[in-house]
Image (cartoon, rainbow, N blue to C red; front, side):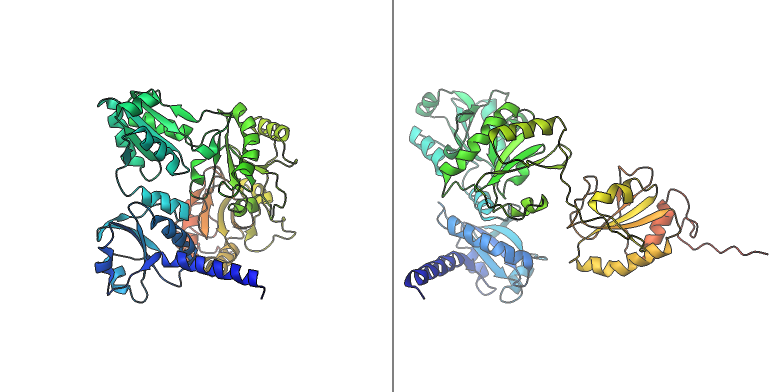
Length: 492
């Protein structure tokens, strides 16, 4: 093997190994004694066979590498609940995997409810140590605080005890896991900033640009809710850096530029394209939200728009409208093309993108097959009460339900009821159906298709028949309202 290649492989191996070693592994024999050695520790109780645990493991290792160097250090620990850590897991009420808990000085403190990506874990756990708002005693302290993290900072400047300071510190306690807070009462800091009773949001240096101010001053009243709204409105600026741990901050209508966003290796190239997005965003800042995202980190979102691979360097522009419909800028990226795209989006002139399978040529089985393109015909406008199952081909529960669902369709084929199924992994689900797991079933009465009801009943044939018999708009021909078969009429 080439010596250079061997060196690279060895380097990668030892780098990965070092990251793994930053995660401490405790067992029943040493859990109590070793956890007590750490002022703050995050413990992952896991099972080796658990898919979610396997997905979390590399992110957890990356976070451990960062947090072990924090001041004060934060330990990341793992405990195998199937082998050496069974008793510890039972003692701490672990019933699913992975379960994450925060410990302080050996004692359980709270459940971990933060992100599951490395950057999010680091940010959440750093907020768990020290005060929720860091006190700044000098101008150097302020400058150091603003440079310490590539993140937004919210700083309060207070000459004396005021209602604004009280509201600020109260909000800092509430948002400590999400926002970096600091405050100062020192004269030299206040004079340097020119503020005696106020709050300023500072944007990180790498996001500074000529289209918006590097900092924003709060001008509202001493009300925690108003300060919170100010932070939410200004946190990401005109064009935010949308990442896996903050993606839920960006609300529709939203335009996202996907390209090689990398503020570590290529900040200049990243901002080259972001500045062009900013030029358009400034014109529509009160009407629509804008963001940039790494095309590699969000490949699954590109797939949702039918885009499998992006080779070129230019941004791919995708959008979600106010009604969560999807839109694609089909022309090559340019400032002019983006501006026209946004204008047409706001004027409702764009055709939404719909991920859909082909409409089946034959659809005469006991269960009607719906696809996104035919959903209106097979469900919304079919003139019948409808039970619809949203499923995934790989889902074990869906496979178990399939023969029962087919039998249900056969039993009710002569009724004024449609039994429908749709593959929710290959088709866009209409926005009024909330599908987060499989199978998900909805009952859509024929006269109120805009307000379908989630089916929460049993999944045996008799359960379905009783539910439909009870909720059908008109009484079924073959069953009474309790779901009992009606006696067949005989001729005399």
